[in-house]
Length: 414
Image (cartoon, one colour):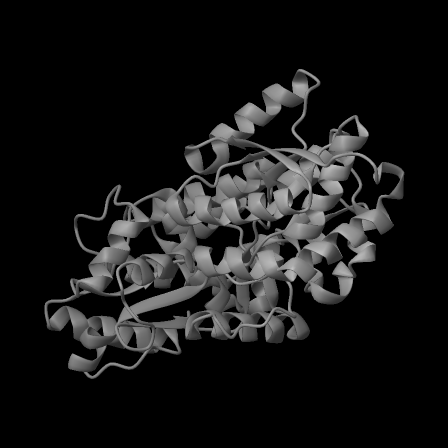
């Protein structure tokens, strides 16, 4: 690590010569407070200190980041913004529009970020052409996880089409096994929905519907088919699903009570923590269909005064996108590096599959932001979609009525 540290120092001296004599200071607001996440942040703190920096930690637990955003707004309104903040997706652009983000283009250009980050993901880190945030990882959302023994005992292969999934589900139900482990929470409903939508609409249809909000796509026969499949999915879930946390659904797959779960790759962390091995105890595959739905964690840099804080931002940005942190953080978190040139020798087979699919999807134009996890749309629009999805999933609403409600809800949110 010594050579890496020296390299980081020389890089910062090169790109921030005007603050070269300042001691890097960084107050970092984040909501990574669980075991693996906290361990990952500790690695970043250690690297920051090794490069002569002083880190002030500001963890805010709870609410999937909601509490952290409340704390952030109070700090910004008081004129005392943190140096760096865990933000993602359109939230980065919203803060930029308020005129409070810093420009870290010098770091990005000196370290050639454009060459090592997929273009779609790099786009989220730019504000009107300048770099304003640094990506930490890529979570894939459209995963299907399975209990290997349950599938083997029932003669079932991992499904590659929704028809195959439906046939497998019918076979499992006949054997007294819950086909789909699911928690009845709005964001989990939305996670399943967007995976189904990607498979049925295709990458272009998904983009038109959930990035561009194209009315023709939102009201198409294909969208009716998406809700038809969701109606079937509701029948594959057990009767006690309401309010269940996602990790408890993962445990149902682990203990053989259920066969499948559709969830992002943070579910893999549950399997690994329980001592389960990919390819042996549990299986992973993308949900049926082409494309890759991503959820990217990142740090946005806020406009601060003082050479020490500016030097801290430059150092932090370089380290966050550096190969060492990208490797160590993602090994702990279950995600994959945002940079495409990090060696994956220490990563498991599911992570390697995810990385290969991300690169192929990036080249093929099917690397797409997750609407359910705050990457594709702003809050009003994503909330409107999820409200409809959950209302349909928990009632006998027809697919045609759901599609009309979807179009109306989005129109009213704009």
